[in-house]
Image (tube, rainbow, N blue to C red; front, side, top):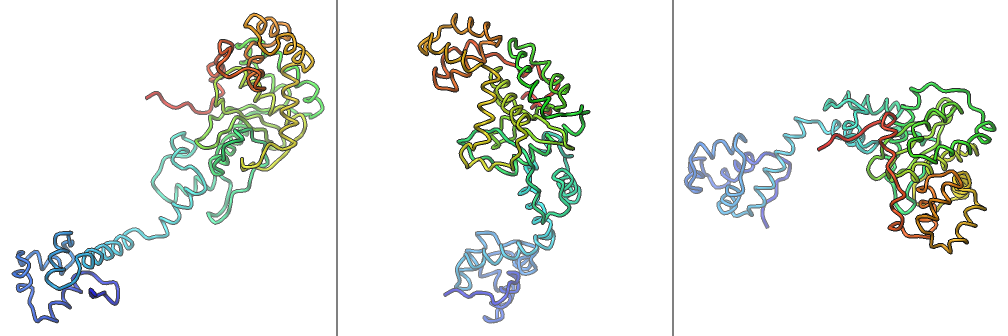
Length: 362
């Protein structure tokens, strides 16, 4: 079996042991290896590293394996690196990256770009509202609408919520009354008749005491929107993950339903099926957007095979854009998502002033 060092030492110390055992000088080893004396001296003094070729030669000279010398060199260099960069800094940085998607937050300028560990830690602690890295950030009281079939990443969802909270906190808020909002919320969706009326949505919500923000989703959050409170006042936050009129209005309606109902729930892991609260919000949102009785009559009259003309006529009658009707039919699996795509229109450009961050063009 090859010899093993009793303690972790540099390769030079172990080579000196082998030389003493054999009664060799450094010049003798240089001649055995066919290497210059200076090279052998530098290896013993640790100023020159043992390369793979040298490890093979030392193994042959001393009757050991090449791996023994290569591993001894590697362990020695690791020890040098640990002295140069103390492990605690790496542990701190690792903890910060566990708590939040640091790189993406810097890219979006949510925190300042820095390589200084103290500055980075201070920024993350302030962003998450924690006093110590050992603390777990408190789960915000928030309703999140996301893709139920995906398992979201908790740290990314939390960072998204914290950013939305910070943006909402900068806005002025009008007095909010739950009963008043519940009575008036249905009227908001008269704005869903024309795409260009979406620009009036933030102001209409503000008049009812609800703040509005758009924070594009972070990777692996699968978020559509959220409803939560800041300083006691409600906030509706969207991602505009899909740039379609029907998607905008159903997400707004869903979050408005939570606000009207006074719903509160902790951050959802995404693994559980849709619960009672979410089903109730979906139901109220659907009623606000399309009258249930009119919708049933429309499906019956068209035998669930509506033409473009029938959709346009029905949409005009209920004062909604055709995208709202088509989106509902697609959601209910009456028609496929490849059918009647003519109805869907983009809305992101109309709400550009409310979007927190837009990626730069390549």
